[in-house]
Length: 482
Image 1 (tube, rainbow, N blue to C red):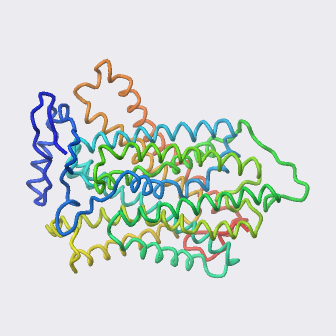
Image 2: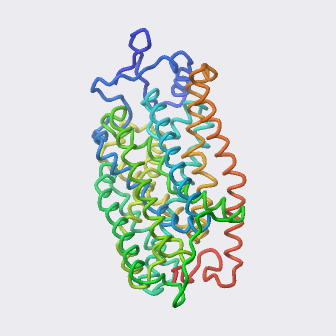
Image 3: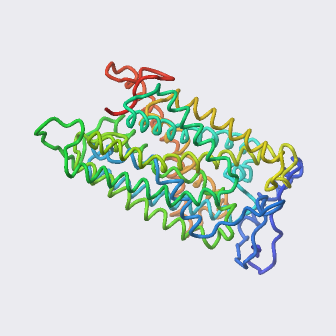
């Protein structure tokens, strides 16, 4: 990759910094407005330099289809299991509009991440991007939020696996024990260090979740939902009438289904040619996601009506639901793998930079492997604790959306756009996008405030419900739907 300014002159390549003081000086240079406005990425077949293309082994090996599979593993997972219930809350028409609309918005925000990456190809994660626009303090805050957000996502994967194991085994073990098994399994999967490995599980993961959904749909076509009484009359809502709290939580769950943006920059950093291949891979992902989400949500809801559950697999009769949970386990484990790998790699890069050993990042040395394993262990320990502190599937999705997905999928892309276009934000051609990105930032702030209030209120109500089997944190009670 080469940088040319608009006069055709070659711009210097963005450096990789190991020394803290030198990097801060570099951050000042990066913020030079003329470079930010004039730099244009030109694809000449050469990789832009970053720390994953140096050292003992080149990690930049992913092509277009590898990336599409990683993106699918990253996004199509837990979120889809909550969507059918959303139709019972919002109604079919508002829910379909929400799913399609947020899908389009998340495509745009991911595209903005690529635009920022093109200007600064030395970055390897979103925290690096934060440093470009706000220096070390912003990087630290952003990095902490990134880790907490991914811990929530991996915690939700842990909860879902515990639900699956409780359902399959008829609560054969304390729920905390099942959560521990899930965390250990995901920890083992995260030990390989390259995203190329993650790409290899993408296809089996996608097949498993589609197969599980098909089992539920077929079983509901032949038998009534599990919780439906004999001779039940199905009620479908074209337009729902939810309370404010329920409506906000429903939209938050749709946002969770598009929570993949947090890892996109890390995948760009291990692509052979992200400028050329990322947009096609992203487009494949979003079209596939929206179509799959709509089919799953609408069909399961139309078959289950008011007896639709979340996760949706519990809507099926007992035996098909157990089979579906068994088949969907690879997809849930894949969610833990792909998000966990993103967080662990961030911790790994931070640790190696702190030890001034970025030249050993891709080595197979005791130091590099030991650092990776320690980072993986710390991350999955924290994720396990979060999973047991918020052991309700719907609640952990809503809280994660309100706190961090609000920014990582939506708001931060608006901030990046303003950073790239600050000098020309009121130029006639930029005004529409300036408005769009201002609305993205406003959406994130709304989700932070009102969304978090609604999510916490829902969690408290569930804990106070006497019929709820999960009475508090670190539960041994049965969290299955039967």
